[in-house]
Length: 408
Image 1 (spheres, rainbow, N blue to C red):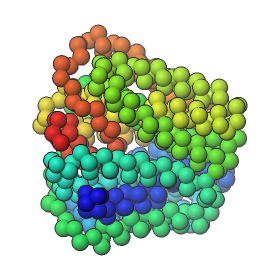
Image 2: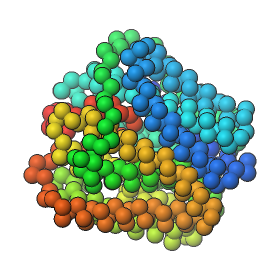
Image 3: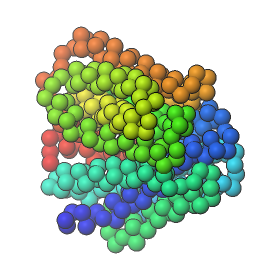
Image 4: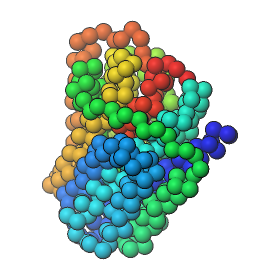
């Protein structure tokens, strides 16, 4: 309980940040449909978000070094609030894409500050519990952000203003906290090639994870509209996806630590292909069928990032872990930037099910590459612990480094 209280300000900011920025993707998709945007234009908004996310990941450590944690957090939160509140002032898809760059930078920048602060304050004795609470708070906030869409009207001033208020409120816990700001950690060098050198399969796995997650989160609401879901049903559709991913972490972690991780990753890829097929086939079975399909899809696809990262870290030295985590995050962002625009274009040209055909093909490619890699070299003798890895900032690797090395 003392641990929770000591980090309460940071965790409350995470929840408010998720509520403010986590709901903008589905709200933008539904608003775009309401306003007559094309499917490709709506997909561009998702790609713009992840472009801003990458900018925020890269810039945040440098900004913290120049102005401090609190001021950097305030700057990124202000950018995110502007990105949200200006939506209904400039109703134009190009303008919205620029605003989504601001909200994406806000997410990455704020998480970088929070994780740098957490890393400086945890000790070896409290690290495991602090990270456990952090993961629960992050998933809970993400789940709540999807559910809140069910009560917001698309293309309405009130809806965007409410999200902007939540984003702005994330400022309060950190700025009024009496906890002393920590020293600024050095920004990790960004070496994307390091991920490929340590584990080609891990590198490809996180790219596929970025393609899958970004397509579903950013373009999934369009699929929901195409199959006849209402706004409140789409909120439950997205929440089922997040919940499925959260539930799968525990059994997948056990399997990943007990068996060859490449085999588990191949099994997940098979499950992802089957889940894509099930999602398309169950679209005509009513709301409950669609929700169940989304839950299964989340179970099969969300853990792939953490599993790929764990496999990559099995081949890394301790001193490489922070830079390897940053490299994996960069590759995830590459997949996530390209995916929404491509998936939305496919939906526009070939119909709603085309997005899941695209996702199924990426997982089939991951499956084939996994089989090739299993023949290329044996499994590592020693494994790092499987850890649910939030895809939040380049500094998350610093928080998880000691846990991967087996320290508590």
